[in-house]
Length: 433
Ligand code: DOR
Ligand code: ZN
Image (tube, rainbow, N blue to C red; front, side):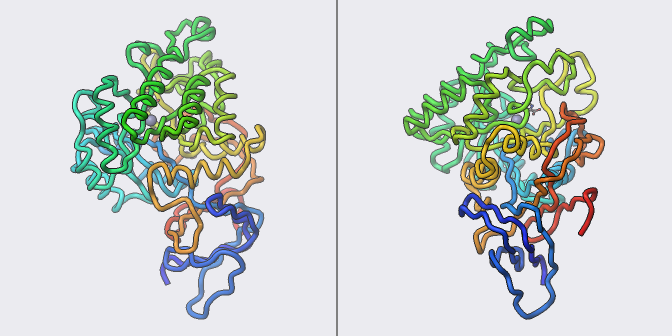
């Protein structure tokens, strides 16, 4: 029998069904057949996997990754990016449109889908561009990309500065119930800034990016969402001001959701003082009060989802002066322990964290995932909540190593990543059973 498995004695934790119970899961032909105490049906032998002491959750979903294929395959490919995702515990990811060429037509969407079918290890959902070539001038082929299977539209990496065009995109997105993901950085206000503007940018002698550059666009896009009645998702929220705007918009019933990255939850702009270009990211690392605000917003649900913004860059893009380095850091293989830290150290509930990695992202992009309900695809992540280890970037599956988290001591290790009943990643170091 293909892709059948029994997971035994794990702590089954599924926020979509409010389940937190020790038990078994039976997978038959890639689907979840039963949850609870499983007695095997007669027939061919089914592989058993012992998950005692580990957590068994719906497969994790990352709605913000950059796979770099087509066009920048020296940084990442669909193969290496999905291997990195599987190692990080992710069973589904959404990949951003800023490839070369840009995913602004059904032709590119179909190309990505075909590559994923032949080389991908996990589920990959393409995000289409809002504007052609991400140039902010003309709408992309949104309707035909939707037919080809995109799950959202975004010019991520760039902001649609033309408010008229953004309004049109929001209006048009309603026809397909596509969520519009905004990258909020006012390009003029950002200027040639490379880090957060404030005390530290003055200290380090680097050009600053004010928080207002983000908040102006978050506020504008919320207003345009109210105007059009569309659905907005705010990518990588980094400031306390943006949190307040999202909170207020939700209170007023505007259809807005938001995400936060591992780095905006853990690092302040203090670390830029090393001039390590792996700390250069858009939006930039902010200040302690911003970290507190995004953490609180995640805990209370104002921020719905966790997302890595995995942004691979090559050594030649990063081993240059801070001013000239590319923005972005890899995230798929370090995301989980950094999220889990919030449960261990900041009192964020495990329910919120797992929900923000499973049920919520599935809802935002509208995919039938993020649950262990009977009949669902057997996408499952199993992690060891106790295992401590040191992040070692030389072990990454990703083609790129641009992380500021190398050498961090963390806790919480993915043991198995299972997609449609098939084990696509198995932890090798922590001892086998
Ligand atoms: O730091 C970033 N890098 N932020 C983005 O929004 C884009 C990303 C990239 O594509 O490198
Ligand atoms: Zn991004």
